[in-house]
Amino acid sequence: MSTLVYRFEEIAPRPLRSEVYELDGISRETVEAHYKLYQGYVNKRNEILAALASVDLSAANQVYSEVRALKVDLSFAIGGIKNHEIYFEHLGGGGGDPTGLIGDLIERDFGSFQDWRTDLKATGMAGRGWAWTAYDWDEGRLFNYIGDAQNTFPVWNATPLVALDVYEHAYFIDYQTDRASYIEAFFANLDWGVVEDWAQQYQITA
Ligand SMILES: [Fe+2]
Image 1 (cartoon, rainbow, N blue to C red):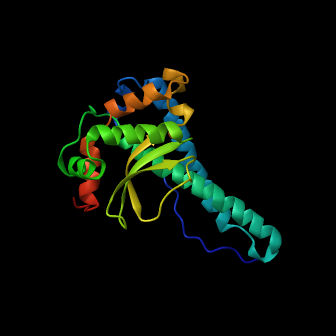
Image 2 (cartoon, protein in one colour):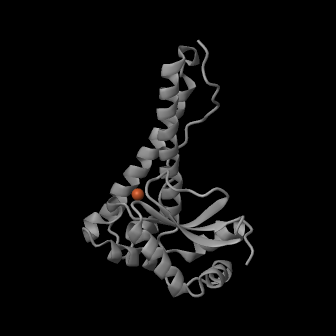
């Protein structure tokens, strides 16, 4: 038996900051249920990597379909982890307009904070799962990108700084089908200090 060589360690879900349970317009009930989904992605990632480490590569063709299924599922699980870690970590603030580097970048690349909000909201209304504000290192600017699932459609060499979850699980308890009102609540709870720290750590320049 020859197996794939995978060095991996199990990871654990990151705990939520207490502020995230006290959002304005996004209930604790929603956050608790949503956090369980995130924990599920972490568990799935650990399971898939363990499964990949034991795939018998000598079993030829049937292995490729197994490898395919595991690797597609892995991209979904890891996308689910990364997306939700951004989402939860930058909620719990007071919203409003950003200052500092992130404020300069948004004003430079979108014209105004309101134009940035309008574009991200439209992207979120149009997407099936996600809208991200990401810094594209090749373009040298921010874009609002669209995502339909945890693993669609990331853009290479772009670093997400804002992640807006528009799956129904993010708002159905609080808003039923009114996604637009949920997106307004998302903006009102953004912690710009967290986003600013990320922009500084990545050494993005305006
Ligand atoms: Fe979600």
